[in-house]
Length: 451
Image (cartoon, rainbow, N blue to C red; front, side):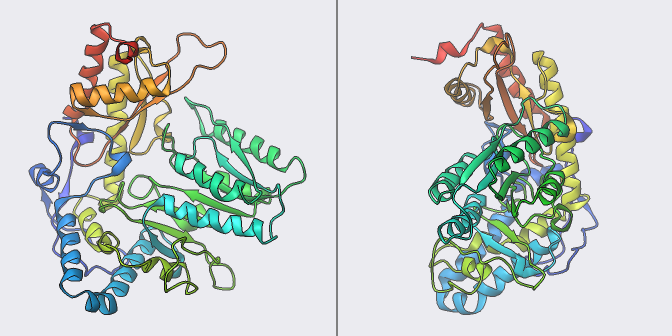
């Protein structure tokens, strides 16, 4: 195994739920790789799980912490509601505030996932259209590679309210940040071409499929220069995967899941809402209205009716867990990035293909071209091949169909999005390499799966 795939963990000497320091201390002793295996011993060992990006992972110690919270509620629900829930969620919000370098805990709300956060922001935009603060035809800008659920929210909220959605076409494969910046500027000009105002820009931090790290700080600066009212960063993958600093990024709204790359159980995300100069945050509301309506988004989100809030209460345990690793979450991010790039390059070399972007535009995921001879000619081909890899070879990896542009012949049309997390081993990627090589050797094409 290469050094990039080594995992280093530190002992934890604190009790879960007790960590409120801004920078929790790292533990002093390194534990063994076998103890990492124990933490993730519930994973199916027959599967090469190189798709952490979709659903994340949760170690046994955090599952145990969640179970304790669940039992605490079930033991005496009234006591839990009146004495434990609000303080527990405030503790989680405070830790998240420190993790992302926000100014104030009031800027941090906890919601189920980034999809919920997007609905909250876009619902607010829709109200601005319906109540006359925005004019019909004013623009909301989003990337073409925006997550599918966010595109549906655009349709449900913005388009129905009279807004004009303008997409930023992005190249893929992509070779530089300049290509993204150029297309973004062009889309902004299109949005403003008829005298309409661009009211909101929705920018991914790490696109989902294909996955690329977007230069969000540069794009937000362009938005400020060009008079865009507000910017919402959909960063579903970011925390635990790439650098997240609210003061540096400068967005009005920013969301990220903690169940993807920060080891929390599903589901938990934060929504950052930047405080204005008057010391207040935007008038956002949770789409599920309950008794706390009108008390601010953070309070509204902390009680949306009787449900299991345990995933939102284990952030202290997750912070304790990452601080057992050498370098904490920064060390984890660095090693995951180095390992996934190394494994991506190994696969591309084995198959005679290429990566979908340069290393500096990857975080803990990378797109790897698949052999052209597999004949991936549609989205359904990619999905069927993914299913075949799972069922026949025990490899779990999402695949992407990249249609050839006009005049392109013999180009790579299929890409795999591989992830690397602390539980992964080099054998997971060798298993994937050998499965694809065997398909190529057998003369397999996606046409063999149809019918």
